[in-house]
Image (cartoon, rainbow, N blue to C red; front, side):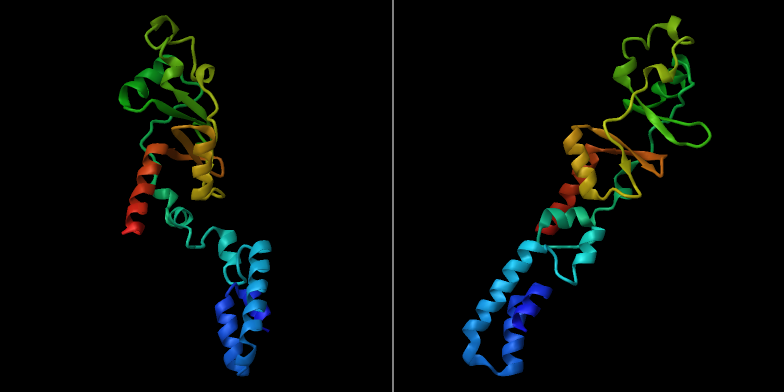
Length: 207
């Protein structure tokens, strides 16, 4: 019985003292400790979470002793999404891009979206057009679709959790990643804002 409780609940001390109290079997306390410890060790090795925490872990809502994971679990993606970037469309000319977006923004990234569905299609980086943005003879012939590119990765609100987002930034080494919800453009998350939010939470949980 002690082995069952220790293994299923991941609570060896609870199992030891509960069974000892229920049975009054303090003469077998040492064997009880051995059984509970072995059961807990094997269960923890093969099944990371207990019966009560497994569902929360699968949903990404489990707060554990792991401080990093705890912080990521509590962070809200909505709090780090930046929605002040100026979107453009693929059919815009270079001149329209500069007049309607570049000169009005202090950012170096511009999301490309479908004009009616708002579906995300790509990005324009200022570095992509820096060599041609002052060539007025190209303002009508070059279109956004000619210089846009795919982002290194996309954050999907319907499935990505904070741990996934952190992993995408680490894996791609990107500074900005677009956020979509079922394909529709929502905004951008910047690595600097994400790390700032993470540090604030780290300080909060460390005090």
